[in-house]
Image 1 (spheres, rainbow, N blue to C red):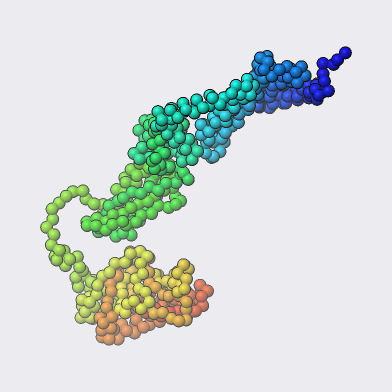
Image 2: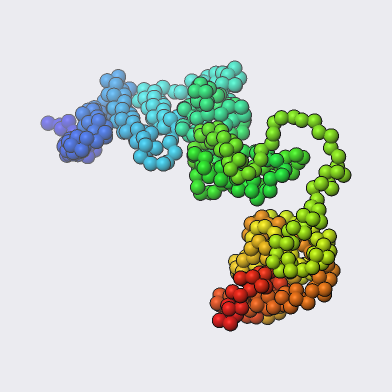
Length: 518
């Protein structure tokens, strides 16, 4: 009696008898474990156990063991069912993977994957399944159909070139990802938050709450500003006009104070302000501040403008008056009136106890030659050998500092403060130190400058003034030398002429003498 199984089919028989039961048992055990873990891959394993393994078994029995012809309708239907079952299991697994990628932004700060890209793997599986069923299982030649499809596609591409261009732009945007849903963008005259991006268009909600649909073809050819990438920090710049009479230091301090007090402005980076233009009768400033949410930019600008109005009164920084008045301007008369008279300068000189001891005619000569100069905070008032006369600090505060000669980045050594009512003069460089002495304005300063000739005449006519200046200059140099030694430099001090309190007979003189003896 002949066996229905030949020797060549023994391997297939062993596969069906041994391997298939093991696959069914293993798939059932895996399905149970996935069910206990509430895994979403349970459905894919169930399809493998219930459909793929039995259909594969029947197909092997019919094709390999019973030698049924390939063109048999029953065998082709069996093969089609097997291919569809495999495709269904793969699609079920891809659905779980795609869902995990779509939920990725919810689990962290990573950017979302476009939905069109997530749909591409499933589309490829469906196309591959259809091609294998038609060409592989049923043996249909697709060359003629592909040729006809190519001609048809060419005709359709000419008819729908604008639509296809939009589709290509959509793919480009999805691949490049210049923005993501939730980002605040601006493109041409459209500004708003991105709601959705698909293969055809991008939906943006503007500040008015309206939904704007922008074709991807338009976005692909436009300049896009993304206010949320690479980070959410954004600088808000607000132009402000202030009257020219306000000192820039005071105006900048007022603007920075207003920026720091504005809700929504972050502390780091700190806000700052700068002069952009000096005009008549106003000076243009620009205040810069940083925010971490661009949607608040209009409100931040409005709150900042309101604070500037209030702080301008408290800081005594006048804003431009919107009223328009007609003035007949006399330039020569205005220039004369803006200058201080000799009587005004004489009153400034009398603010010094040292100069008050001079005779009236000497004071009159000094007042006639003196001038009043204004210095901004941080500005150098006297450099090495830059002035040969005498200066009186009328208002403000200055400081003697030593700046490194070879290393400008090294911090200055603060030596001694000079307050209002003190006098100082030329500073001279010394080879015994690697630092240059400077007198720098700590605040905005008003300084009365006396030219060298007038100062020399006053000293020659007042021996007491000459002796007092020499004594105070020597005392001050020694005090600065001690300050340098305490700082660890241990080198000789450059000469600092007359950089001492100006009252030789007042309380400061006695304090300095006691400090020198100590």
